[in-house]
Image (cartoon, rainbow, N blue to C red):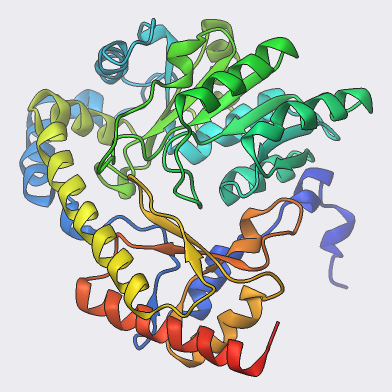
Length: 399
């Protein structure tokens, strides 16, 4: 007799939700489909030749340590390099404020683990990063979305009045995933003012900050308040995602709890990868290759925007991000991009349904488009196909 797995799953496991993005990618994984669905960096930015040399050097010079277990906190040299870079951005930190993680997704998960109890409320944007929502749900939290930053205090005050004080505010201030929008200084101050007034912490997710094409960089929230902000960073978008190198910056007492949580997760982030990254920074390759990546993505964003302007029917709007990897597209009210997705697949083009990024199930008329991965020819053809699918849906009145 087969075991009924549902009878033995934990409540946390039952709260886990599949990623619709991953499921959509599998459906759209046909060679003829032009997919704007992934969040993939462009492989041409990967520093393959430089890494060949560095990896050989690590094996020749420090194989004994690089191939062994390492400290849970992470490579001390890497933590010091990161601390120095962040001090240049106004953060008052040392390496003891940093823990290396196996991707910034693990950073979100570990932070969720130490702060969330079943039934807790957390506040996030509408829309917000799906991977964070999945983590919150897996620990049985109830995310509450804020559609506009100016509504944040009203939402928090209402939750507190009903006995649901949030554990934290989760935000992606720079080139938000999925919207591509960046908080201005007024919005950043407002988030911190609300957090201070109601004694909340802020999780600042910052995977795209370095990929700025235009405009003036705004200060990190952590630089404005180092007592109640926890900052996440990663090399997945600026170097390559295969290393799975991320980090958490936080007050030392929070780092201490995170270290304990990570010890029971994976003991340490791959030591060899960290050693390679240390040399990558020491050789000055990060800044050199980041500049090339920014130039490439700026060109790709501009091309994507020009294609949208050229082919999209009236009634469709989209964001114009100053950096990052994504556009966010909005159809007229009443139209459903879940229905559009099936029409688009018949036209051999794919995207991510916007509803997946809305914790309350709204955003049905929105979608996320990635511009970093495809070449210019496929980008233009893909936008033409997507516009055709939208026109077909408009013509049929399918909502």
